[in-house]
Image 1 (tube, rainbow, N blue to C red):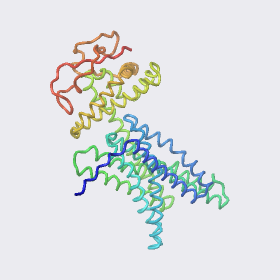
Image 2 (image 1 turned 120 degrees about the vertical axis):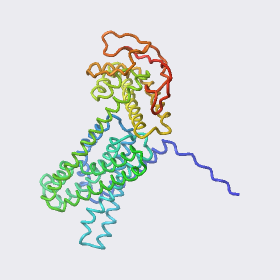
Image 3 (image 1 turned 120 degrees about the horizontal axis):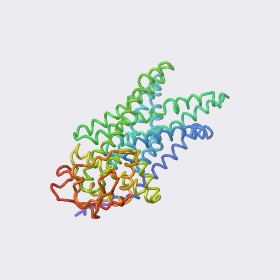
Image 4 (image 1 turned 90 degrees about the vertical axis):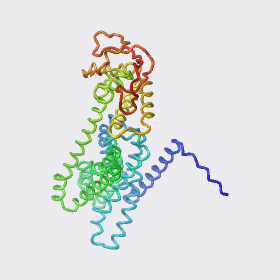
Length: 446
């Protein structure tokens, strides 16, 4: 008889992170060495310096979009690292091999086919793999359109950074060979086109794939989970091919495509991202009062968390009250409360997942641990920024209040045990029916 082989335990998080880091670093070193050999050491250094200039602006833009519910740092670092290292290496090698094969088969159309078909398919597929991996293995941190756009955008930003090294390095080599100044030659023209006129091109293309994956995660239908990512990836490839094809139409044709097509699409994506960010804040204002009624937070907290300006004031107040340790607790409280609101909204929209109660309970425990500084600073920030405090029905009538004269809120609860129930309503995901009066948390007076 043959014994069944023993199943090996899954690798620990540290091992997984270490393996991914080694993989990305190896890919990065390999692709950088390939670029250095292609454009020369001097052209490589010039390309790195010029390619890095638009990166902080793009990273800051995506950081702002995802600021309401920040992604874990390892997700963001993985996305940028995959785009700048692994995706670029795969794309460079694949485009070169396929381009050589097309040249041997059809020399006349090989360049056009490589630009408009091969490069868009290969590059958008390799960049889309980062989004797929995050959604497949880190899905708990992905809850909507904003997360998809941020992950895809950072992946494409990293890809564009490495790709620009190649184009700028080649342009610098051409200027040196012709004896022209870099500011008057191909280097300046390439930098103007890739870093000033169209730094958003790659992020825009890949954001379509991120949007498709996000729609797949927020829908109930199984068909949507397949069609939305496929449609997003196909849209990314189409936009990329149209953009590359426009470069073969001459200056006037390119300008027409840029103004009449790419700019409106870019404006639509920006509008969608800003609107989705605002929807997250509105979700916080709509969902968190359920937890305020049961005593998990003060009545002013949901309104305070629905404004980024009020959140910033609360962080400043926490820093003044307790230093950086208090700031860490305040930031964690804001992030956990936002995640709790988005979790509940997702359950209402798509139905509660089997592990909803476990995930909700874990978030509530983390919320409770950080409440000492976070809640009073949020309440004070709401007062300073004149945020309207919408007291849920029945809140002021609860027993156990300590009066606070001159406050915009009814007062702070008086006892110190964690609440027994997790939400205000007697129905809904993760909410036990009935339940009696919960205990109230102690909130330090400001």
